[in-house]
Structure formats: structure tokens, C-alpha cells
Length: 112
View: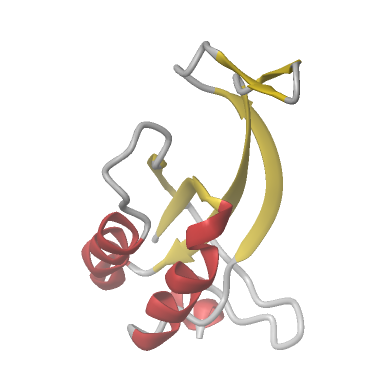
């Protein structure tokens, strides 16, 4: 099992969520987060300067069985892509064990 952590644009979240459901990834958690990116310049609106270095994004935490890993990464790369700076990042890590509390099932069965 693998844990996929993805930071994406908020504007792409609905598209990503629908694409994940289409490939059978029906459970994941997400949070609204703020980060600091590479864009350092500010914007001026009506004479007031606003910093754009603090970036609003959505953080997704997805645990998948090994056969779903490549499909899930492909969906994230294809669906969250705009080609602009700030599209996000994807991180992959190993999951040693997973359990469903209600049924006490372990392993990949707990992900279904």
C-alpha cells in the first residue's frame, strides 16, 4: 500500500475528485492549506499592494493498493495540470498497515 499526498490548486479540486472516482478511488481526505511558493512578486489592486507568495491550495491524502498507484498518479498529473507555476506537488510513501475499525479488517481489504 502507498500513501499519496498531493497539493493542488483549489480550482482543480472538483475535476481531480471526479477523475479519482472514475478510476475507483472513492475515499480520500483533503484539507485547505496555505503554502509559500516560488512566486515572489505582489499585485496592486486599487493602489493597495497584495502579497501573492502565500498560496491557497488543497491538500489530498490518498491511500491506495499498489496496483492503483500508477493510475492514481496519472490522474493527478493529468487532471491537476495547468502548465503554470503553482500546479502543485505529489509525494509517495509506504504504508506498513491499514485497518478498518468497523470490521477490524486489515491490509488492502480495509481500503475497499
